[in-house]
Length: 215
Image: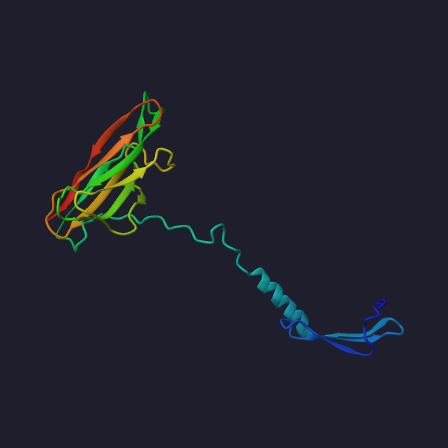
């Protein structure tokens, strides 16, 4: 193939180093006067190296999505038990009623649910080990506590399930609460306050029931 060469090319043969990934070089011998390339030699490793580069580029993993982090793993279901390190404690069941039926089953109303845990002891703290929220079918939707939470004497901690939450749990939604203490304490008061929004004015309280107790 004939081609016109640029004036910047120097006289005589030139060796052009290849890309380090290609493992070879191209030797071009140029005849300036006649403007033709008289000799082009490519080592066979050039072809092999090019194929390897293309394969490596195709195997690169795509960048992660917004935030760069993996999605959080769903909570792990299991049987709630009082921490063995505590000599006293309870596991309690609290109906949540995050949705109620109105005039028919086809007409429902979402409700906001606030779970309140009151430490009634005047001198000793209590420790919440877990606060689990389940839907109508008993599926675990959320574990509110990533780590045990100490509640000081006469203090209260609360946990909210908002009306607009997509996983409200349904009419059979419930909490399972586990607490313990290092010595005998007054039993806590644990209950859910359920309220509506708008002009309906619905509100009521759901009390906890003991599932298991220690000792």
